[in-house]
Image (tube, one colour):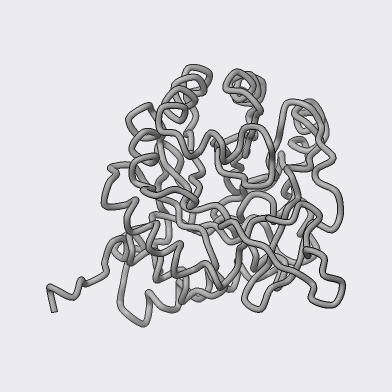
Length: 307
C-alpha cells in the first residue's frame, strides 16, 4: 500500500488532494458524482460576514484552455453557513477547510472567531486574493504589511491551521508568502486566478459583465508551477499547489516542484469525479515507481545543474 497522507500544520490529510474553494460548493453539491470521504479534504465556498449576491451576469465564460469567472464571492453569509451548511458535513470522513473573506481586517477576525470553534471545521483558508471584489480580496493580498497584520489578527482568534491563499498578480510572490509565514500562518495556497478577459467580436461586448475576471484551467498551470516553486524556495511552511490541475500527471508535477498538497478547481466543472481519478492515478504512479510515501515526491525535481 502507498502512504498518501500529508500534514498541513497540525492537520493530517489522508491524501494530498483537496477540492478548491468556489468550485465544490459547500461540500454536498457533488454527492451524486463521487464519494467525498475519498478526498483528502474539501475547501468550502468562500464565506463573508453578510450574505453576498455576487457580481451581475454574465460572470462565467469559457476560454480555449480554461475559464474566466467573476462570481464576486456570492455566498450565504457566516450565520447561514454555521446553521445550514456545516451540519450537513457532520458525518463525512474527510477534512473540512473553511475559506473566509472580509472587506476589512476586523471582519476577517470576526468571521474566524465565529467559525473556529465549530467541531466540523478542521482548518481555515484566508482568501486575500480574489480579483473579483472591490474591497478586500486582492487589495489585501498584494501588500506584505497588510498580510502580516491580517495573519496576526486571525492567529489570535484560533489555534486551528491557518492557510493563506496567495494571489499570483504580484511582482514577487515570495515576499507576500514570507509575510504570511512570519506572522503565524501554517501554510499557503498558491495560487488564485490570474486576471484575464475576453471579448465577443460579434457583439463587441466583454464576455463578463465586470469585463475583467479570474482565469483558471490548463492555461495557467505553467504559471502556477513557477509560483509554487518560487514560494517553496522561500518558505519553511507547506505550500498547497493550485492552478490548472486536470490529471494525476499535473499533480505529480506540483509535488515535484515542492507542493505538499494540491487543490483541484476547474476540473470539478469538467469532470465532477476528476479529483478521485487523480487520487487513483497518484496511487498507481507511486506503485509503478516503487514509491512508498507520497511525501517522498515533494520537492523531488532534479534541477538541470544536477544532471
